[in-house]
Image (cartoon, rainbow, N blue to C red):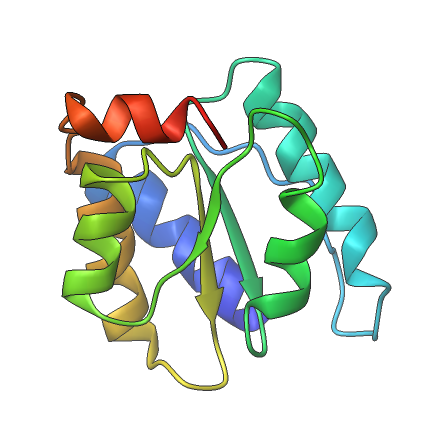
Length: 129
């Protein structure tokens, strides 16, 4: 929860992004698929991108990827993050918070928000997902 709050502050103050926070709203343990589904629904409804924060990033990505049109990518390095956008046109970044510092996470989010999709042969492949 604290990690998320800091990232929201980064997005609003440093990036100038408008953030819709769909939860969670406390430090209490939650059933994460609920929130992954909410983020996926917002992306499908027109949000530019979604951000999921989880211990490993796996469970939330699995849940979000159940939605047709969602391409949630677990991102842990600069290269993986760039490729998620360039080649896979990922529309949700999943941050494995147990394994990344806040600083590293904000670097990856910044790349995710700005890296363009290359299209071409990658579009053909993405269309098959």
